Each structure stands twice: as structure tokens, then as C-alpha cells.
Image (cartoon, rainbow, N blue to C red; front, top):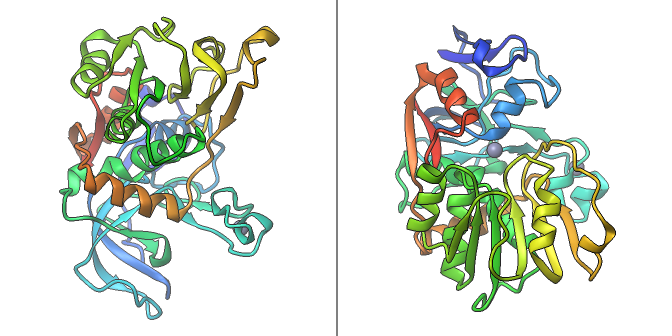
Length: 336
Ligand SMILES: [Zn+2]
Ligand SMILES: [Zn+2]
């Protein structure tokens, strides 16, 4: 099969990702073999390719938002059949025995495996995945629409959950979003459907700010601009530590800043008064399978509409460069 492999991390413009002919993977007893139809690209792929995440599997195939069809099954798989349409996300497998798994916090598993980082992912024609961690995909979404739901969507859902705001009624809730790429443009649709007012702080007037306006933002401004009202919560999707004091300044007392990225530039020192008043900063690490299932159900009910820019499998390097230079409107997807 054709697969992109990372021989050595380097800045993405040096095109160190190579398209190779490699043997197709063989599913283990608890795994599915998928023909990949689409694979979303994510900022985390950039962190893998550029080495901000250390190499965990040499020559790894990146990609963790896989939409595919089951073409063969391991002998112990009972919950899928050949031909099923399946989604595979970042959380590839957990140990099910560490203290976090036992507490139901499998997203924090000490021995978790991650698709496209510690095991091969979906920048390829075929991929394998443990069936217990794969998702049945709602019919509301075609393959390209579904791909960005699998990381950008699920992580945005978990970020909303970790704001601590009650799920039932978000009328009157004022939510800030910092950064408006793949995750932001899905997250705003959930928050708006729940009844929240959304204040979007992002650079790029022509793409990100315009899309935020189209998706119903109450107010749109530059990344460092202060919204006109105090916020109950803010989510930072941009990997920029300097946005933390900016977002704290926009919060009302008791407000929460949720950090949605796996990697962030250093956080500058700031005055204690910015966090005083019982304000909270917390990160989001990965997701549980329950997050994934709940999110897909809610997204299908709304229904969420993902804005995507498609690339062929052969264009993976170009897609990553486009992501890095902020020139994708919505979410990028590789089509196999
Ligand atoms: Zn574990
Ligand atoms: Zn991701």
C-alpha cells in the first residue's frame, strides 16, 4: 500500500514525510483492517512531524482522524462486520489496569497508545485499529465531513465539558474561543446549539474571523483583543502560551480557561490578580471513548456541519504546510 512515513522529525517545509510503498498491516485478533477513505489532518500531526512530540515509533505513519471501511476482522472482533464504516481517533488503546483506567479516566492512561504517534495512523491506504476503540459513524456525515469530527470535534467536546458549565441549559452562557481552526469551528456549533453566546478571538480576518461570523459568533475580534463582556469560560485552541493571560483577563470571577492543545509555547509570567477571584486554568489531555460516543450523538442531532478543505493523499506535505501557515478554512482532510 501507499503510506506516508516520518523518517526523521523536521520542520514541515523540509518535506521529511515520505510517500512509500509498504506492506499493508495485518489485523491482530482484536483489530479491524480498514480501507482508509479519508483522514483529517490535525495540529498534533504537525507536532509529531516537527518533533515537538518525541519519536515513539520510528517511521510512523501519521494521522489520527481516520474514516474507513472494514475489509477484514481479527478472530475476536464481534462488534463490527465487514463493510461497516468506522472512525478511528487519537486514543488508540489503553491498558485498562492502571489507576487512571480503573477510575474511568482512560484519557490519562499511563500506557495509552496513540494513533499516528505510537502506532501507525491513517496517512495511508490501509490502517488497523482495535475494534474496542473504534467508532460507528452516524449516517448524517459523509466520509469527508466525518473525518474532522474524530479529533477536532471530540477534543472540542471535552473542552466544553471541562469548562464545568452545566450541560442542560447554556442560555446566558458567555463562552470565549481563542483560535478558530478545525476544533473551534466545530466547538462553536455545539455551544451555539446549546444556547451559549460565543466570543471568538482569532487572527486572520479573511478566513477564520469570517467563518466565525458565519457560524453565529456574537462577537469576533483579534487574538489579543478583549471581548466586550466578561466570559464564564474560555477555550484556547491556539498553541500560544501568551494567550493564557489574555484569556484570564477576559474572564469573570470563577471563570475557567481550558487549554485544548497537546503542546503549547511557554506561558509568560503574569500578575496574581489575573487568576485571583477563583479563576481556573486547566488542560485537556486526550479523550475517553465516552466523550467520543456522546459527541458523535450530539453532533448528528444538531447536525454539525464541518467546513473542510480536501487534499489528495499525495498532497500530505502540502496539507501540513497549509495548516502550519494558517491557510486552511475549517479543517483539512486527506482523501485516499
Ligand atoms: Zn491505563
Ligand atoms: Zn488531533
